[in-house]
Length: 287
Image (cartoon, rainbow, N blue to C red; front, top):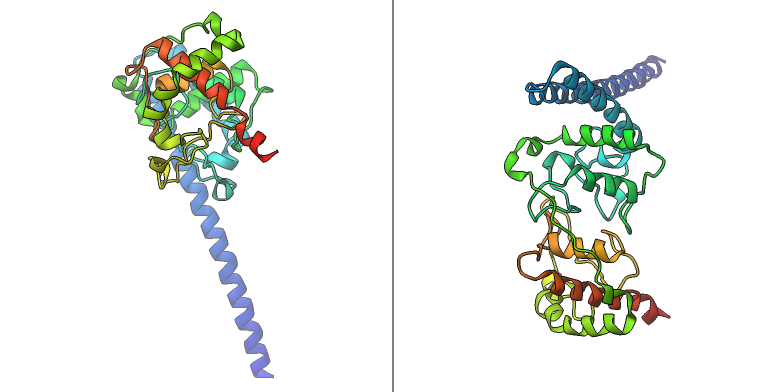
């Protein structure tokens, strides 16, 4: 009988130890998030020291509103503190962005530069094809502006003026692009250019299987497989100007550099025509 009571005491003791462990773990997590949040508010206030009192209050309002939206809409993937370590992140092939690094793929600014607010807004509005990043068309412009203020508070990279740049000018789509026969002629001109500059990673047929693309890792330490250009949709958008922007500016944090200095605008448009000619080949081959 004494052994029986002793066993019950041991079970109860082990149970309480587990409960205490869980409670302490949750407590530390809460304190960590709380301290990081306070730190972000402090840094936000310091960075805004040159603003008027009214402007500071407005930005603080946007920050707090953006933080609320982020925790409600974004933290499940991007994590409570924006490190890309949310609850769903581990099971995703395309990992959520770690906003603490201040490195963004999709931009209109030159390679290596921070995106503009409009760049961030476009990504939030449109989402990223082929990933778990959905589009948020139900958010108002004010909601997105607040969200951007909060995202920009998560990295000190945004304080570095050397990383700020004006967006590259994206030329209007050429008239010949709308005529299939002419578009094919321009695409043919870009064939050698594609093989010399792009096929090493994207493959000769644009299937993302080039020899230079094997084993690539991005700056966040995750596998970085070159895009399959023969797919029907592209992460940065499917429109001609979306493709022009990606070729011209590249994708920060990856091996995809920008070609705005290497090629003339007309040459980039011919590459866009070439890529558009590759679209859908993968699905057609399956059929």
